[in-house]
Image: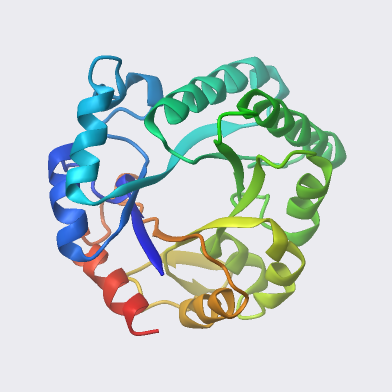
Length: 266
């Protein structure tokens, strides 16, 4: 298994500390979701021209790969499409320069909007980024997130985008909110599109989902991992610890070893 964590879980760590701690804890990769408080790829200090080669040498020395970049790009609001495309293209440029193989984007919300229209907006937005990324080796991964966490909505996008650059990032917590232990109903039809995975844990309670320490919640993490491995999944298993958004969660020093312990026992 290729194990990584997103930097969302260690917002107070410097890039140097991330490169020090990741291999020490047993990780092979990191997924960039903010460094030193900066979330936009083109503004991260370590990705600037004149610094990029030093950053790549530091990663090589640490034996760590950057397995993805988490953007905030989403396409549910048509009025922001141009802004989102510009942000996505900037991230693709940085990832191409830094050897990062994928960016994460969202469909995200439906709300009271026209579902078919919003799904089409997402298809067109993702297609535009895939077209821009052609020839770079950078994949565009639609994350299972928000209201794009049902088979019908995610599959509609997957079938609507025509590009080898496209894939799905399966966040198991977001699909769990709909499918619970019956994750196969969601996973099986989408299996050919899954390129990357996010793991976290939550407790289900009367329609509410409270994030918790990994292994103490209700998500069938071990069953999901075994199924992925059985089916030949060879992508990254990435811990998305949301410490930046939920400061009440345990620190990275607790969560990151938890993931290693759980995953290596499977």
